[in-house]
Length: 238
Image (tube, rainbow, N blue to C red; front, side, top):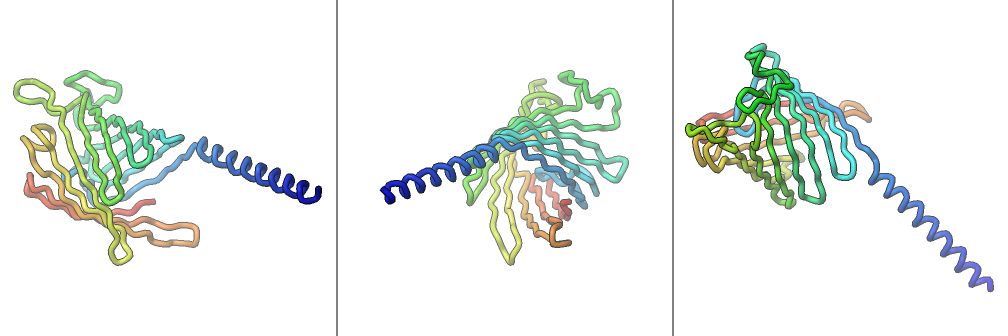
């Protein structure tokens, strides 16, 4: 009887522990994650393009159960730099992710840069769809503009400007590196036809400030063979 009683006690305890762990796991899965931060960069270089000089780039993201909503902006210190606000709705599971991004640019023309102006040929918004998969040794992504102020061909048709990229992460000397190669498959906003528009090598390193606080420093060297241009940018993430 004592052995049976002990066995029952052990079973009850195990069930209780498993129940608590399961409840914690469900609670973590239902948890809403909010993150906020900002980058300060010496130059705003994106997909092989020079998009501005020294810039402050704040961001805020809310995520739950694989879904996320992110707001990202860029403000250059020079008055001539374009101000930008991007809103991205995404979903991620395992290594697979998809997303829809609304890019908005505040340029000189006040009438065309009104935020709530969505005319096909007069808006400052560009809408993009993204599909990506991270295989571990290499991550691949495909991005296509499907609406808004996309590049228009001579025949008046939308270009559906697209950009495909492969990213290979690796470690060297205690630093995290990433090699990137990006191309555009046809005529559009990035090039007049099929071209490699981005070859980059970037690195980042965590810098400990205090026991509980650290900064992320990063640098990237970028070549754009299509434009015969090269850029080097440095930044810090807060």
